[in-house]
Length: 401
Image (tube, rainbow, N blue to C red; front, side, top):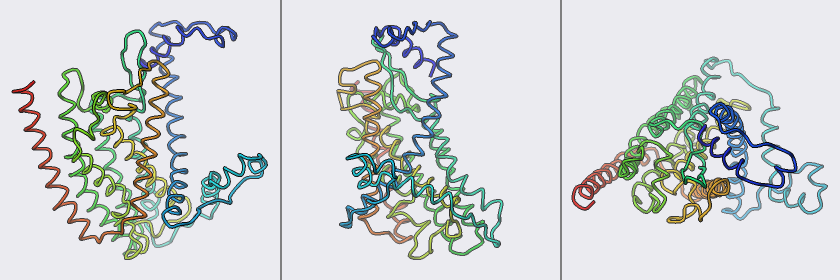
């Protein structure tokens, strides 16, 4: 973040804008202390904006799901909820109302204002702890996520906009995101009911099964990044940087397919929603939950959808790069940073739409079919895919490079 702050200071000092001159804002000194202070301010602002943005994104992902479901079923979806001040705006008010943009705010307010039940038959401490464990790992992984970069116009050096550029970022995200299963298991067990417990057991078996295929599908991406001796193959920033010319979805299409299917299973999304399958387990692991606690589980699910789409974008769709061979469209500095943010958002929203579209199109699998797909289909393909890239890259490095 300090390097990003230094690049911003250099751009700010060199941008001879009339607004800066009119306000009488002096140039910021490019000293180590100034860079450190500016970096700390940037980090605090970015952290707050990230959490608020991701939570707001969860609310409007629900709206995207409801609108996509309505489109798939020939309905309109939320189109009436509004607010007096917004409804008074001549044209904008009607558009916002018809598109349902006020509906997530109404749903959130209704969820928080309801009575908070605490059943007598549950293990109260773990019953209250489980929703927090389901939500916390998804928020922690935000620390390692790069969302765009800053390219210095003078040096051409690219710096990531992320809270922590840890070297083994890939390992950290895979390890922390897998902890979400504890919320599912603990919620079902602490409910002291057979259907939630059955859903939690299903969830733990499913997550363990598909995580093997998910990690194996990413190893070819690590191998492709390791071809550059200056890059760190376990850093998400380096993985995106190596996709300047060709995205990994072109270089490793089978890995992208395996990762996406495993991602659907990790997010408990239909057709892999065995932990919450209402046709045979009522509501699954969160049957006994309501109001705010259920809202945490609900938010955690949509937060995992956003983070899963972000990871797929970083690993296979070039991250914040606009196009293959044209990553920044010739821009640099702040304009390239803004372009990167827009590209990331467009790709993430598109993937969210695809995930929701599949949910309302493909019928739910049986549990034995879910296990069969994970162990007998995805895992052999993931192992064979990794071995093929291992041999292919080894031959290329030794004979052709």
